[in-house]
Image 1 (tube, rainbow, N blue to C red):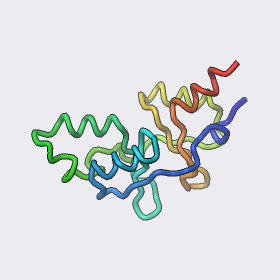
Image 2: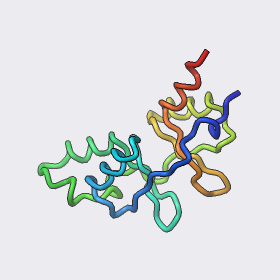
Image 3: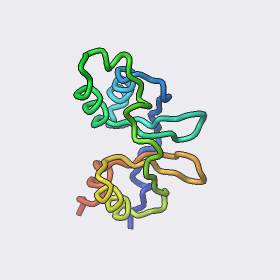
Image 4: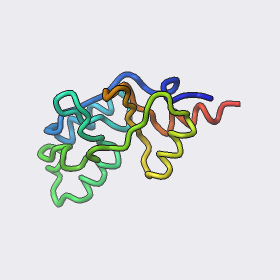
Length: 127
């Protein structure tokens, strides 16, 4: 059975809680990912995704939201996580039941990666 460790992305894309939306979107675009980890003092504080950008911009009466709004306001705080030895199927179950597409991977209290719905579908769909 394929583990999360085998399919996760180990290259972490992270921002601080005070990062504005434009900077976070730029980090996602540069890394070609759909989420960034929000780290506070080396610890996972939240996760900020493409959906959060859309929610923030659609909720703002002004186009200035991207420059002045911080990810901390729109992120999912204390996100659900999974261990690297969980199976791909277990990770998929967690994502489907939680309604999200990105799952931080924690080992020994430290973030070691992120697994996405796309990562899991690639593995599950292989013959």
